[in-house]
Amino acid sequence: MTEKFSVSTLEVRKDHWADTRIKTETLMDDLNVNEVLFKVDRQALTTNNISYASSGDFLGYWEFFPTDEGWGRIPGMGWGEVIASAHPDIAVGERTWGFYPYTTHHKILAGKANKASFSDVSPHRAKHAPIYSQFDRGSANSIYEPAREDQDSLLRGLFLTSWLVEDLIEVNDSFASQNCLITSASSKTSIALAYCVKARGKLASIGITSPGNVAFCENLGCYDQVVTYDEVTTMDASQPVVMVDMAGNAKVISNIHHHYGDNMKYSCRIGGTHSNQMGSSKGLPGAKPVFFFAPAHRETRSEELGLEVLTNQMWSAFASFRQFCDSWMTVQSSYGADAVIQAYQLILAGKADPASGQIVSMGSE
Image (cartoon, rainbow, N blue to C red; front, side):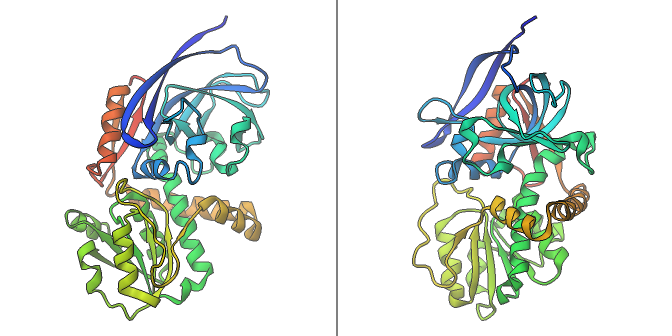
């Protein structure tokens, strides 16, 4: 018997992310060949998601889940459950981790199925990095723990990004630097990077943050030093440094580059949380700022090390990071469209507690 599902999806204005709406649609479970229907369970909502909006056109994030012109669906990492499947190798009831829109239900055209994962092979996904359209099977993950699904949603994607950028710095012999500057130090992506830098032990991790977050960052134990944005220009500029920028604040980037000059040996941007302050970084002294695209480095290292070796290294490091986060991070859950919008606006305004992880669900608890 065919079943009808009422679907609610969060959308934001592409040119003004504070403007939101809930779009309602109807989906049926009478699927075409190889289609799969998910009930989207719980997803992380972090500053990473604001970065996806800021790079929506540049990196094509808006194209993941097309909708009406002028509106966008921000991708969110999290867990879903297969509730209907017309693919012979994908079973109803499977728990899967991947990118979904912030929605109650999501339908894909499934393909590339193997023991570990399957992918959305819809035509509009073809030109994007394969990792973004992949759904990992929980049952095949060596470190999967049902009780850690929320933590997994909050940390897995951002940790792997940070692990990969730290790996890039390592394979380039730290760009002959001694210190790693990390902006937006209270963000979870920055904390993950500081953790990786600290674990490697070759560079000093220097967190840069706002005055109100200094104590929080210092108490984490993964930063060798924490300074405020205003204090950056008092630091010793005679030492070569690398910088990983998570904030996307053009003024901050410019100040740091001009302070260190030619001793800025590598500068990359991962995120962009300052929605109104991003600008051009052309003409800055030192290394030319670049955008770090994690899937590209992952592909390179997979070819060099082999996919199995690389995956085992990342999972081992992530398992350790999860345990580290047990000591400081709490999970805050929000259910229903109104609560999701409130959580989103809190993240967008930069007012979320850095020690809290926001997990949201468009459905009821």
